Length: 447
Image 1 (cartoon, one colour):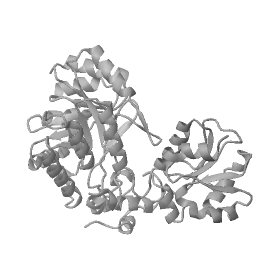
Image 2 (cartoon, helix red, strand yellow):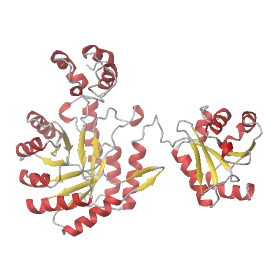
Image 3 (cartoon, helix red, strand yellow):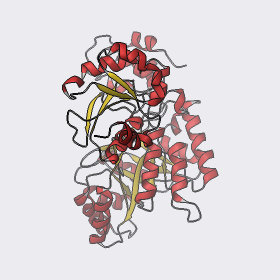
Image 4 (cartoon, helix red, strand yellow):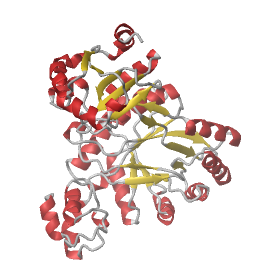
């Protein structure tokens, strides 16, 4: 039976030494109870307490870390089936498969192009997470050269698709000290692949076509000393993906079935009859941890990255921008002053419309705890008092020579109260929708 945070705390040393990287033993105990920390992070727990806490403290889905020359991808440590129950913690990594039988210069060109790909989404940089390099040639020298070539143009994390220990070793030697994921151990090669992964200190993927076979392999590999594992249940279609990946998640979370409590890797492009982007989207939602794409298509990748960002945003903490006064199109003291909330989508919608109008302006972004205009107003987070307080805090009087402020049309109801909170200011009611800002400014602010 799972223990509560207080029950776990009673079994800890209670020294608040911070060696676990948490401020107190109680904080660490709460994380253990929530399955968001590992007992091994406390170096001072007694053997007796360790035995009692082992089952209760281990996360239901193990955390696996893949590291490149710069940056890392972490997957696992999830604690819920559905995001609205709490939140999802680690976004699935999106990787592009490259093969070592390509020309080296072509490999470098492809990797460099994909490595440079980045798009801005409401102030967040979205990009590909890494590369999966396949030993398609079955030649250790060719595989090593391919891994080395890709590593020379990108520092992103790698997955080494190597079916034998010799190929895996050749790939590892070319990673320049990075920590890739080795793929994959199966019923035939698990012992030799376990030796390679253990010596290199890298995580290892496990491949089998049934859950029973997967569970058998993970137990053998754990006994062999490999702790960080990733599961490949060999799904290739919409229905089998949904059924098998959901079953794996339920077994890990609801049944605490440790042999299958690991992140999942999928290859949505291996079935030529299936739309790769659509299946990858399914895997992002249900419940892929590492997703290897066959095609690098910026348009499709952007859709997947945005979907992932939305699903893996904490529903209790919306995406926010920093409150303050933002300058758009180099405004001066005569430029209009507009107000909005700090919900990212709201801010970027308004800011982009002002920028697109070509007119300079000041945008006062109030602290609405990441809520949109109407939601924040209904929750009491965007009212006359809040607007007046932030206008004073961010010294708007020093930025404009006039005393006019434009509020969103959806909250016209606060204009009277705002006049009382900001005496001497003219409160102008702006448009209800951001797309109407250009025409509003032309009509109401002609200069």
